[in-house]
Length: 254
Picture 1 (cartoon, rainbow, N blue to C red):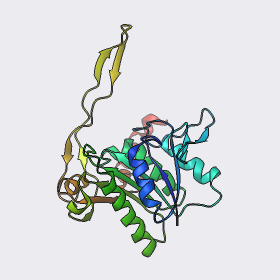
Picture 2: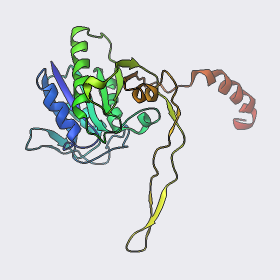
Picture 3: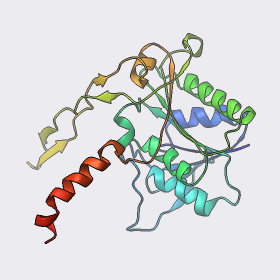
């Protein structure tokens, strides 16, 4: 089995190293990751300059681009044989609820899914204790399950693992995305040259974190597995917007 690994924390991140080491015992591993931390880069592609692929001392490949760039470059140009699966992570911190919109970790997996390859994003919630091995073992469990029970169509799974020892996990739960409150305000500061600077504020606390959500599962020491989709269409508003436009048509298009 051949697995392509990527992330958004950079090719030097401890979570990526732990994941590659653990999975190398059960599959052929190729790592293509960003040359620096690209957290929050979402699904951006670099279109205004060429990308440079280099190989580090530990055998990992790294790209001067985004997580999406890494997977796209690997699958459409670098690899002669397609991977059987793409795994992005292990991210240093959760990617739950609204985080998935901004997450480079999820974006790397999304790109694999769009290219027709089963893809998984794996994140370690909190990560202050550094239980990356727990998340690596969960990822390995998923790989084993996929190998033994192959899914015919591509899937995109967002997995969040509590930052505890593997034996402390209380199981696995298929969840939906929760919701956060709006983000904290930007933080205004001043550079040594007197220039006004702004730092993006922290993510808001969980708002929708009830039973069945990714927040609820991880808070109760369970692994959260959320199947994701790409279609952002809000189907329940199609008829409403059509009627709204019909009412405006004489004004807008006369």
